[in-house]
Length: 367
Ligand code: NAD
Image 1: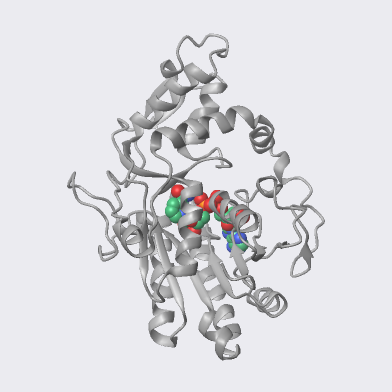
Image 2: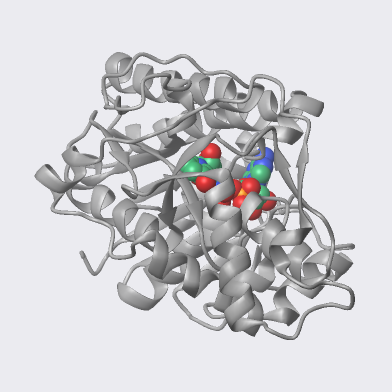
């Protein structure tokens, strides 16, 4: 990696963004600026490992705020943007789509425009080296009915939920900025991630924490929905690989080659907990007895599966974790990091934000 890299990461206090920030600071010499407004999903605790690094800085800014973004671009002078800030939870998008339209579509537009204004003024070498990497999801492709089909980079878009429709819109904007303005973009579409620091509303941490508390483990419908699971650190490694070696204007699908039915995922977690947390909450004989089938989510996609062969072929990337190794690491992480999730469950992770001045004044570390 280039020693003069200055990477502006949006959404760096979220699940995947924090993994990217931690990896950039620990494995590269890059300067990293994290632009995150800290919604409920943004957790500064997830960045405590990098908080004291002099190569890390934090801006509490909404990506819809063009003026603040312009000031950050002028001050930080990034060589690249990795755009992860988004509203990301499908259930929330069904209950209240407005924030998804605002952040995922309008926010991406405003970030694209600030980045393009900045890029247009760069001198030759800096201009040629600049990259805007947009991080997206395989959910833009809709779902697969055929048991053997895979999403490739040319699969037509057919999003099903307000979340995936808003992400699809943002992908179209990014692609159009490349075609129309010659703006140097990269797009990645990834399958479901799991791993440490995952917000407890998402399936895997939700199952682990409900089981540990002896609460019912809700499974949508009959649990037959198939997802392709990728360990978050494999995703972060893939994203850095694409940023450094991807070809401008190209899309790369990133996946784990780990297709599992939701019910299989839940049962695997219950078995691991039997082994790793044998001391159960009162009244619980087997963790799997807590599994409860609930009414399916409207528009629930049946199957997602990614063909990640382009990443392997062109960028020599493959996941290091299998589902079996990754899920074991994940369950162990939740068992060993109770303070992190207790502060999420109690809401304490959000304390200390009141009274902060709005950016672009910068906050060092995890504030
Ligand atoms: P997340 O919800 O955990 O984190 C999102 C982060 O963005 C939070 O820190 C939040 O505070 C921040 N944010 C939200 N709105 C903002 C705004 N208006 N301005 C500035 N910051 C804002 O999400 P995640 O799971 O880490 O996903 C990151 C990206 O990766 C998203 O773009 C998502 O669509 C994509 N993705 C996620 C998955 C997955 O399985 N989680 C899979 C594929 C792609």
